[in-house]
Image (cartoon, rainbow, N blue to C red):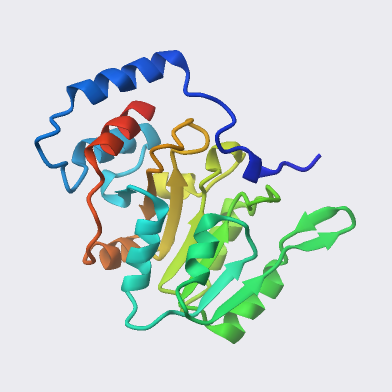
Length: 239
């Protein structure tokens, strides 16, 4: 049967125990103090949990912040190669005003498929500056293997950012996380992740990105709102 990921958001309540711990955390916040702009404690906690370097992590209040930072890294709207998707991130990218080339999954018999050769041909013809793939795809649930994503990211020299939206990554059998754990992540890879869906924290909207070396160096020079104190506490609790 088809897994329709666009129906997963908000399907369960945060369990009582973490809900109570979150309530206590909120009560202990120093509301008169600004949040740590580097979110260092959260990055350390996330790093330990994910077994990656905290330096490879970029927390954000919502995914639109990270995408805005990517957009600001270009003087004019970039060319984007986009996997057809219903995700909010795809909608935000389409609103940038640049040239958008959409790529669709194909149907082979009764199964969806990703035509890697056709995608490589499209990258070569279009020379995108940003590539966006959501994996698992919203709403089909189709998953592109991590090895394929790594290969594609390494074969697109025109792209400054190869963005893989893993908002639903916890529902997938495989993600790009092992690439970061083993130090094999392509330099321009950006893996977007969220606390909203699997952790029952949709009200907070916060998430984080895993960044390859070149993507991190480019994004770190650009302004972004610091992760607010409530999100830092709530996301820390989720881990």
